[in-house]
Length: 555
Ligand code: NOJ
Image 1 (tube, rainbow, N blue to C red):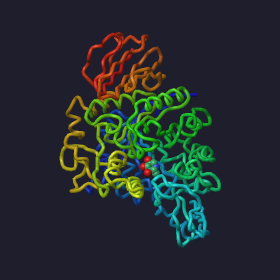
Image 2 (image 1 turned 135 degrees about the vertical axis):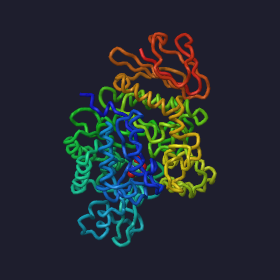
Image 3 (image 1 turned 90 degrees about the vertical axis):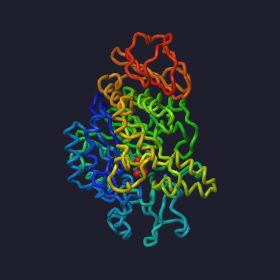
Image 4 (image 1 turned 120 degrees about the horizontal axis):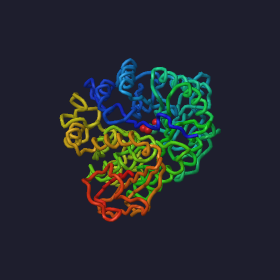
């Protein structure tokens, strides 16, 4: 039965530590920086922080290649300091969510270094080592890496290949080995005992691979994905982990590429078989692309509305949504679904559009001040492994440099990874070092936290208001969802709960749009509780929407 667990009432702020705030002046964000911003985070009106990986890592994929699961990277501080962060956060009523990356380890993790020593090493079976085909000339199967290229790397010494669904420095763990699952349980306990309140589980739906690792559909259609997504033992393994998690008061959100509501319900439906509390699906991030950001299409609001309608209605009363528009993998949302020209209007509209839905909202660092894509001109200035690999792949197809760079500017994950813009001072107040580890977006003089604090009309103040509204009105969390028929670029929905009705109206257009409320909702009798423009009069039971206008009415 669906209950009112605490994780349904919270909003979560995501920190990608390297670019959040540098406290020791070495150009890299760290825990001292985090400590100095806890009050800022609390003031935003969120109730939890999700940390992208803080573990020691060679940074082939900036922390998502873990070299030690039970420590903090010296770049960020010490375990002791992290304990202080937990305590200080808890004092302020903020929960702490760790990133749990167990599909793969770094190729420098001691388990992998051991496993390379020989077939008889006890760690050999922690990973997928296989003989190649045709005298080792060909890999064991045709699977492709999510970051481009084949998913197998050859080791001359062993004369075997190892599997890596992501970068070659991210080696897939063999979760079928019970010892590996015991390691995972011990990692869970380690952090829970330290005081964390939950986990965001990285590509958790990839952890069980089909027995025999068979070939996938041949290219260009496939990557082998059908053999490692929602694999045969996924439920079983998650149940094992759940048993540990159940000993604590914590929650989990699983990252789930290619997920649909129907499949999600098999994992997150609130019955005794539930294994995760919620899932990050990707379907709403494809309104400007086909499947992934590198296959760009014009933004299509109709597609976005269809996806939201499906997730909101299919999960309602059965399971809980995780709501997000940005994270460290996604380019900035205003640059994608909004408008840089109407940055403030569209930033507020996008916030309203997703936070007024049912689910737990996640807000990514810098999103709350309307940070934009970085528009980095030259490939030498990118650092993200998937961008660099995609660039090489497009080069192989002899696509023009200008076209490839336009894709990088739009799709690169580096767009989300520029340092947070705190002030208009040098390096945006992110660091006192001469040079931050990664370039600051040149627009920091206009777009920064200090400027947003000083401007009562800023996106930042709007987020605060919106999150307060969500907290004070159970209808925002628990109401049902009805998509309204509108002009294509207008996304309007109605929610009902305990005799109240909420009407949320959002325009994705730079042109005026007519909106008319349903006949059984009298707008004149409702309160306008949130909006991103000065109030303009209603015309009959509707109004003419200005560029990217949003309004929320409560009755
Ligand atoms: C998803 C993470 O969000 C992303 O940053 C990472 O590259 C992959 N999983 C692999 O860990």
